[in-house]
Image (cartoon, rainbow, N blue to C red):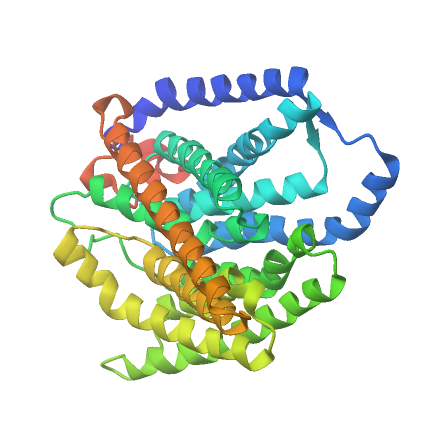
Length: 420
């Protein structure tokens, strides 16, 4: 028997895909060109291509495999991640190049612009994780486009009015994506979600593929945090320090997450969800605090605290959010990205105040730093609410409750063809 609403994709997904892709091609024809300076191109290739490949692997393979953990939603988890990322990166290139188009008449493509677009795409995939399995691909495309638009706007506001460095604005992607996704999940809440959905579970095969995504993310996260350091700091030593700090924070967070996973388990066993996600919390936190971290032990302490917060959040805060606030966070983005991101923001605030030469400078930085977080949270949560209410319209044909977390609603299964 065919799943309810499965046929609606024929009349909604292809028109949306062709409309968006045709529009992007037209924009690229008239407004986008490749950087023409040969020396600049060679320098960018030598300095960015390997890191670009690392970030690319994280976004496609890392997030793609990480989303395959649900027992009957692995096709959609990996396939929709690729579809959304392929569309979102084009939109991010256009939005990030708007300012350049006004100044230079064209949007210029180079390795740095592609890396920035990939990072914006990662922010949208974080937001999508909060509603994974409860939406259709049309929803996911709209979520990605609106989330990236908000994230780019947030960066422009912070750089223009608060004079925040570009690196610090781009690393807010974890906080922005997590709280955007939380508000989206709250608006799209389905009655009956208080109880675990019958298909919202992990089996051996999907769990293994999801851990593979964790391994890709864990391995390449140092490149993710260090690739844009030279944008604000031309000293190559700062980029290397970002690599060292990220690696140490990740190592400590992996060990800490495993320890607290066992301690908080009633059976005294490891929780696969914690290993899949909480081991990455150190990379999230150190990425946000990176500009203020100068000592190895500080990076290790951040990794320890991030894994602790993430593991306890996954164990206790995630079910509390569901019962108390009707916020069903499928991938636990609050615990994995939101809380560690805020921890990194707090560490950066404290370290910068400690390094300040006088009280006036410290107070000034604190005020601007607090405003940075408030603007980011306000914009992400507001746009998450707006996007959620937009997607609640029946025109988008939301997935039926019984077909949540189910690939059969969207994919062909040849061995079941005779049953339909």
